[in-house]
Length: 259
Image 1 (cartoon, rainbow, N blue to C red):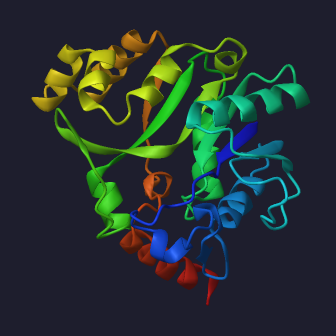
Image 2: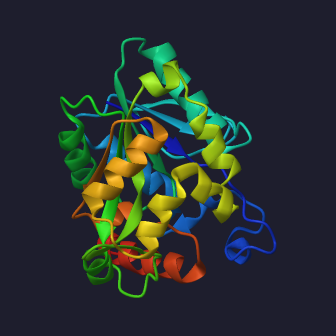
């Protein structure tokens, strides 16, 4: 398996984490004695199913720590879609016959090898185009109380989105225009609602969609075969966007490391 890790982003002075980063890359924030991205690299590298890792978003000279499976470190390409495409194309250059990859962010330092292997098992043998992880609210709050995630209200279920995805590399070989549209509309709720369909958004607002129904409707809108995976691993959705989330992870990972 190939794993792509997005690591770009330097918080601006008006953003919550600027006091911690002071203009540096968020991926290099210190957590329990090592850079945040190194926690992710260590967990991914420990999986016997992972052959290579490509990191995108950091200068090629960045010291991300020892990682024997790191195949490439690619500079920031300017936006999320370009970063993912660059990393995916690098995988295809190194392994032209590769079929699947995992995409994850560098700001989920609590991610475990066990959680990644669980996702790889779900992907094994599947012809689906994309696999997106969601975590049920009670699972998230039990594992990370006070994390204050944002939840989608489905029929009988509240979930937050994970930061770990599986996808077929055919989406890189034959990119779909929908990806750029999703990036272009990410800060305009009205345009994004139009992209996914107002009926879908309306049903979500009324909490009338089940997870399976939402999966089907979004897949139809995007022209993809997708699967929403209700994961038992809250670590997949515990990213670092705010200082209190960073504090939670520093405390937990310090304990885990015995610091």
